[in-house]
Image (cartoon, rainbow, N blue to C red):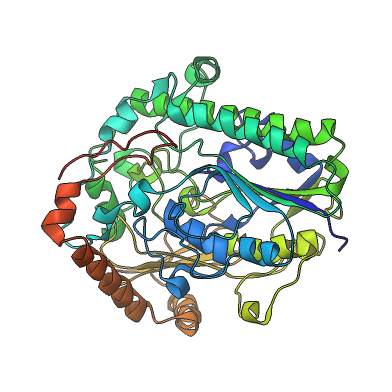
Length: 480
């Protein structure tokens, strides 16, 4: 593959089905749809951890959460494990970031040549309260849904600045002789569920499709899923009008995000860089929007673990759709190959593969992996997903099995009566890791983290915050 510039655009909490090119009948995402038309859309892409901080550490390093031990939102990436940013910079490539990183902060080297207005974790440590997994205090999230609607937020303002910075950056690097890489990371449509009035009004009166199993009578009964609803105070069900209002705000934020991305893609065109720049758009995880009675991410259902993944640029087939499963650990080798850098011996055991070949070859079976050891879970959760099936392993709870081909909404758990398939998936999982040992390791590390901050009562006293503040904004702690 001939080296080219690499523009990696990441959003936060953008569910795969909230884009027009992925089939949503109402949402307007014309710029991302246009990117998909001139490139390749991956229909089976997954996060490796459905919560921000550990996923972004996994994305940076190309390794699974259990391999690098960045377990939850109190374990921000600090540069101690090499990233693809380090690889590019070591080999003389310009690799800058703009926007949300959710890393440890300016005291550590994350591998970039420059970080432009980065959003890092609170106080360099993040959400320590999330390390409490046993008898954890309930996170009261109901107001986030009931307060949804039109308005302004610091996140909306921040993403306008991120697009501004990106357009300025492209202009300043249009004459570079060597391929460059830019990691452009937006924070929308992450909550708060607020969108500009004009975008909200596009959806407030629209006939919006509701997500799977949103009615309380249809909620799937599984101990771990029930606990998520209880832990975040989502039980009882919100009213239909409250859910509709929240969805209108969320979709408005998706369209607003699309508009900011469109500004950047238009700048590529205006500068004559489109034909020499490979672009990937994805998100760190999805958003439930009330599916299964849950709001936010956290689970291995497709609305949370499934992500958009679109690639375009030189050498990428146009108007193409790929069913081969991919995940965010694939970004490390993908970024290295895109600009013409090389992997090192240290990278030989990376679990991911470059997507550029997969974009051009026939669909094939491939298994991707995800895990969760963070807030709202008492024990570890693991996912294996191939082209047809998804297996979810819960430590000390019953597994789930879904046929995504016959049941894309995951309404029918097939774990009863499919012992052979369950056993095959569990054997595959245990070849990758010991789920009980990894769960115990995560909990030991989290207990040590709590102790290092003065113990349980001190961590409870520090409290929690709903959303990480943008640069210059103070976190709003809630005591427990």
